[in-house]
Image 1 (cartoon, one colour):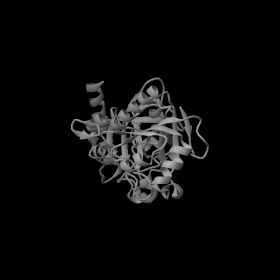
Image 2 (tube, rainbow, N blue to C red; image 1 turned 90 degrees about the vertical axis):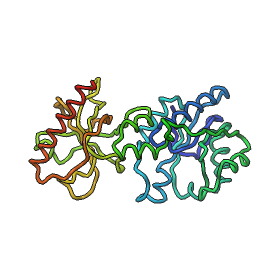
Image 3 (cartoon, helix red, strand yellow; image 1 turned 120 degrees about the vertical axis):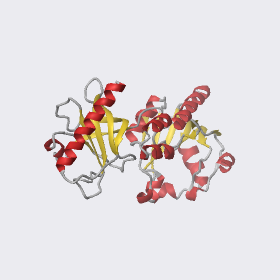
Image 4 (cartoon, helix red, strand yellow; image 1 turned 180 degrees about the vertical axis):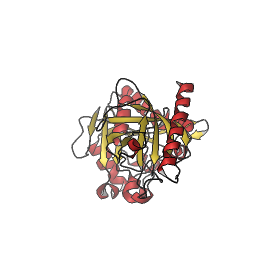
Length: 306
């Protein structure tokens, strides 16, 4: 898959295109990608995708924007897995935000991307002030046809990034898995922490979080990226109320039956079961005792579920 991080250069060839943020690449997104690839094959066009970074809601109001479900890197890996040939990552800035709906169609979709077929969701809006809708898009399109992807439901629930975020925030990992079609994961590089876990008897791998996490609490997890297979562990995601007061979120994982130097390595944490919410303990001794109980709970989970 080719990744293009600007819209300035002319495209290599006309494309079949879809547009969106695709945060989480949930089952609704997956249905769109499958339809795009199918149509592109019929039309003998490369399947291409246009996405944005940062998310438009982060650009307009970072403080009130929802937490990200996925990084750009993790989304690209999924796009590649679903057969996308070209991904355009447009920087969402003031220039792009100020484009009128008509200019977005004529300049971006037709001139820069050479779109010949376009797939969008039924709630697709675009252009300055979100003024463009489906009716406007169909009337303005000169070089491409437009197809609309209807809502995908999972067990009666609309598959959406918001629904996934709500499920994760509620600790309902089974619902999140149903909406995503896979277990939720966090990925990143292992960074040096304050070494408190080691002093408590539970050394942890600390993950650098560039954005506020969608979920919080203590979880039974599998960790990928440390050898041939996954490692079982216990992850804590949150603000560590017993030992920190800065409110900065941290993700850290204690790997069961593992001892190795892994600083700098990129790992993925797969969340399987929520064990409990974060809590404030009166002292470090009480915290250490609770971590021991969390580890035993995780071991019981893995003994039952493999």
